[in-house]
Length: 384
Image 1 (cartoon, one colour):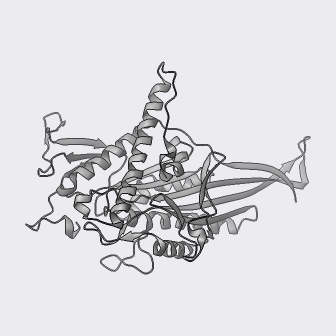
Image 2 (cartoon, rainbow, N blue to C red; image 1 turned 60 degrees about the horizontal axis):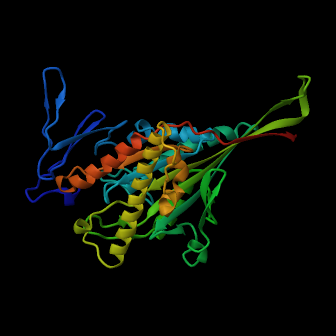
Image 3 (cartoon, rainbow, N blue to C red; image 1 turned 135 degrees about the horizontal axis):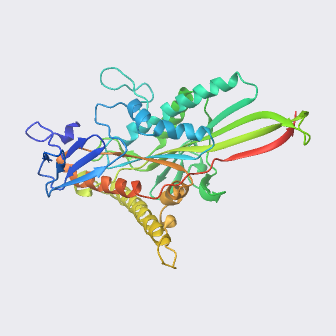
């Protein structure tokens, strides 16, 4: 537990209990979770406890590699190699571990005990680069990756890879919808061939990212950060004539392209607990406003899915443009992307309301209708 979660008696008072994929949360921040089981093995919930279901749960002993392997993150990364857009989001209150889960330790940082822990984006690049090395030995395969790094700060899109003195860091970045994807036009990108390349991108970006100290976190992220990995996989196959014989003068080129996005959402915060003021208070207001917009979009998507199976004739408006965040996440929320939501929680009783709110949002997202996004691929016949 974090030092700020320890009470005056030197003990962490938890508002959580976990049973496999079930999470139990106390609605009363002053009461622990106490459960009982009847003779049939059914859990009896007291009035002050709410139960949530998830696909996987990891406690504070789990490493990011554990999360990558069993949360669905690895399967999402492999899907991106097949041309399917993929989005992995980290959601939760401030200082609950979102940034560490996503980018891990960079620039020689080490965890207690002297071990360095990679985040999900480094583990993804580790997997992609292993595939990249395999394709280098095959003349009919080519795999390339380019990274861009953005932040949404006070509703402004900022290029974290642009030089600090460059006007491009802010003014030239705009959101455009192209072929069903909302992209940030004008963002710098850097080629990625190994994890060290990615760490340099992360180091440069985190230096430019807006952070400040609050009562809850000494290095609190004051912006939403989006790391995009644009993956292009090109393969070449034999071409045949209409008569069925091999065409030695040409070949079939298949290009699969996908965007793998890691979204580190700024944490929701209760101003009474974070004790922010001045510029930090303005930042907190923008953060909470964009997160509320995200919640409203999810609620609207629920209404839209319900009305599609009813007799309602008026289409439900989904307010994607209410926030730069929701507009950027449009394809992920609509099902055009394979989307994974990771919710980071504090077990401390003093944060029970924030924990409960985070789990309710996760539950709403989990019940959205599933879809099967189509891969992006282009096939053409080219001369040898």
